[in-house]
Each structure stands twice: as C-alpha cells, then as structure tokens.
Amino acid sequence: MKLTTHPNCKINLGLHVLGRRADGYHDLATIFLPVADMTDELEVEPAAEVRMVQTGLVLDNAPADNICLRAWQMMHDEHGIPPVEIRLTKRIPFGAGLGGGSSDAAFTLRMLNEMFALGLDDSRLECYASRIGADCAFFVQNRPAYATGIGDRLEPVGLDIGDYRVAVEIPEGEHVSTKEAYSGLHLKEGPRVDLREAVTRPVEEWRDLIVNDFEESVFAAHPAIAALKDDMYRRGALYASMTGSGAAVFGIFKR
Image (tube, rainbow, N blue to C red):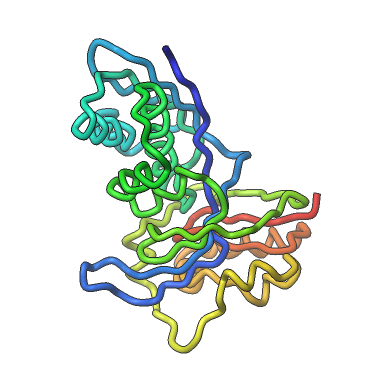
C-alpha cells in the first residue's frame, strides 16, 4: 500500500511578536492561512527498513536528518509502526517563512495514521506535531487559524478568500534565518490590532491594519525583499506582506 499526498505551504496574515518567554522562545500572535498552489509531493510505502529519499530542491540537511523521519520515529516509538520508505519531492522553498518542512512532517503523521489504522484524532495528531515544530500542528487540520503561544495554540478562523488569488514569490538569492530575524527585532509597545477582527474587514483595508513585526528589521537588511513587496502593490495587489520571518513575500489579488 503506497500513499501519496501534496503538503502545502502557509502564509502569515500579520505577525505580532509579543515578548520573550522564560524558555527562550517568543510569544506570537498570527493568522496562518494555507496556500494550496505551492506544494511538495510526499509518498510513503511500507518497506523492509526505514529509508528517506529526497529529490527536487536541494535541502541543507542529509536525508537521515529529514523532519519526516522524525515524524516516523515518533509514531514508531509511540505505536510500534513498522519501517517505511518516505520519498519527498521538495518544491516549497525552505527558510522562507512558508512552513514547508512543518507541512511535510504533519502530512507524514497523517499518512502514517491512515496507513497503519492508528485511529488518532486531530487533537492527538496535533499534540504529536507540536513536539516536532512550533507551527507543525497547524497543518494537521490545515485550515485558517489564529495562532498564539509559539504558534502552537490554534483557534479556527472563519476566513474565506476564495474570490482572490494569492501569489507567493522570493527574491532570487535571498534567505533570512530565524536567528537573524529575531536578532534584529525591536519589540513593539502598546496595544496591538486584534488580527481576528482585522481579517473580518475588506481585504482592501488590510494594508493599514495588518503588519508583520519582522518586516522593519528584515527590510533594512534585505532591501530586495522590501522592493518585492512594493512591486506586488504596483502590480495591483490589494494586500502584500512578508510571511513569517522571510524571505517570501505574498500578494493578494482580485481574480
């Protein structure tokens, strides 16, 4: 039995960094929105021994260190599932704020749950996913959500932008590490816009309401990313923003 699926990426509608936690992480507030037009391809098949095959974009880790294998190892340790071969064709750029690796891991958990009839509900799968990565749990249900904590506390959001087109681009050669993004961040003071309320407003109003706190410092260090956002607006985007800590930028356009 071989299962094949297509893990999708996500974008952040607004990203507020609220403060540093005692554990060294930061409390966030953001809205995750799945984007179906940019996906990887993931195949899982029972095998005599565990094997990971990576093709497509060249990743900065060896196959043995792939996050999908961490998902298998967790299910093996918790539920005794047998070996599998995982084949990943990578198309979602990594280190771009799109959550591609987290999506791959969450989809792996879902596929293993189905393949071996583990009977785990979404709540259990989200618990496992959150142990792999902060935003990994989002991809279990894979629907718009208001995320707090370190991105692991999720609240469904009734958001439908089906009448719009989302374009995601990355300036050539640009990469922003999470460490770099946080090192340049200046925490904002005072009250913040409630993103759950902001996204109920017409998309045309988001430009003046919804901000990503990382843009100020990332744009200063990477002017090509700022230029891409400006170009999105020149091309007619109703709303444009960097997603996550960069380097990807998205624009929301009328169809």
